[in-house]
Image (cartoon, rainbow, N blue to C red; front, top):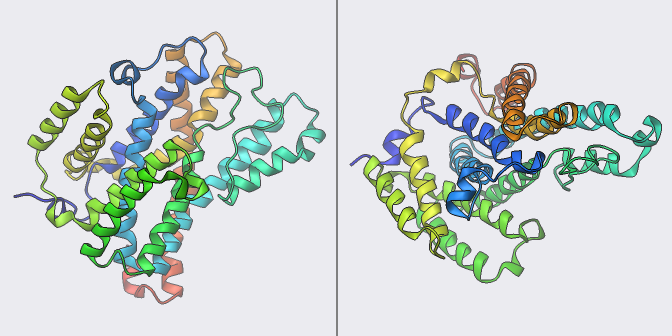
Length: 354
């Protein structure tokens, strides 16, 4: 029997492609919000439960829960912290600088001096740069658009960072290193999360935040139990069948999570598209710049249809993702082994070979 543990070996997998397609799908899913009059996407029309962008974000959190759990268990605390900080913050800070002070300064309807002194500008920038407070709006920017948000996707980055912190806490408590204990905490936590949502931290006080938190935890669960998780295309067909027969019922959310988890297990860890890794991972950059790209296209070309906006925005976001990877993210990640070596976490010869 093939298990998830058998497949998750090395770095040759399809995750680069899956995450890139997910980032582009987020752009597609947000098009009805950006371009007034655009019909709901096919996922919304089919399921009346989710939309394509939401499914893509769910997949991001599922993948993240799996990979960062592997990261902390394999590398330890300090290496884990270095890797997470360098992966998230440099690209995020550059994005915030460009969106807040370049795009915002050009497009705001306020006088430039008033804009730069405005309290909301600095609240937006500092809150998101420190990932301690969310924000969507900048004064005078996109105020005539269908949706006024300058980046409606960035909320998930804050949730992601806090989930990294909670995962670190569970590691320090020893929960991640004992499978039986983790499984007990996992199932008790799920029951508590849904039976008493008022007890959850304020960051997770809405159904969307709790939902992506669940997907992250499922990803962690799959990694911890990887040697006991069977993987077969047959199980994906079964999950698809269950989703089909429960569609439109109150049981569909459970079938949806099962289908998404099974899809992740079956599709992710074969190596048909591993060759894409040599080009780089543009998904984070595409995700960060996707919504601002859509708003810019809508601003300068307001007569475009929803699909036209989506196509041009994907092209612009891909360009931004390409530049973000090669100019910011890739260079930041190269610092990881250097920091680890200075802290004595990595032998020098290992550092040179990675």
